[in-house]
Image (cartoon, rainbow, N blue to C red; front, side, top):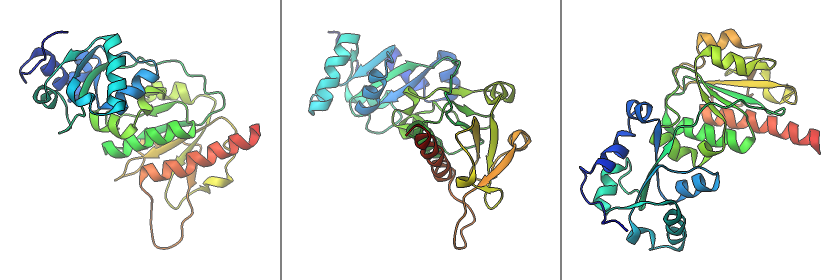
Length: 263
């Protein structure tokens, strides 16, 4: 085993640190993953990191970390000091392991009747990560990220997604690329206080849901593509729900209908 990397100025540390920024991710075509759970999720989903720094002492403090270290030993990793890991990671405590994974290439998606999700202009990383986690849990396929949406592979989004990135078909593209994925679907635009109630729509048909940003909602390009509006009826004076919450309510109704169809 190589001597542990200890300097924050080590080239491997600086490379991982560059993946915090959108420009660095695009240049390298890799993104940053930190912590035991996310590395477990990535390996379980068949992803292979191209660079791993691991603090062996930190990982062997827990049975889970020890088990992960055994898996990493089969792949190959660079031992690193806590100081080096802190310099590479975005979090203050990276839990003993930091890695670079390749950005996925867009894939053709066979939705098999699943509801597509278009995310338009969501800026908050935590919200986007939660939306991706929800979409994965509710069986939404694919997830299409429209221009103006925050980078899905930013470290905070990856952490909030809690492994969804490794299982979801994701496409970040322009509207022409999104249109190709929406072909043949009825497109519903989530709108506060306008449109049909979400439980009145037949989500068993080929469908797509557009969820807009926190501040201004869906943009003009998104609105131009909508065949209709869907809303969540609410009691009381609340005007609207958080984008992630609204997506969860509607997508799980779509899942409920699909499960009833196959029961």
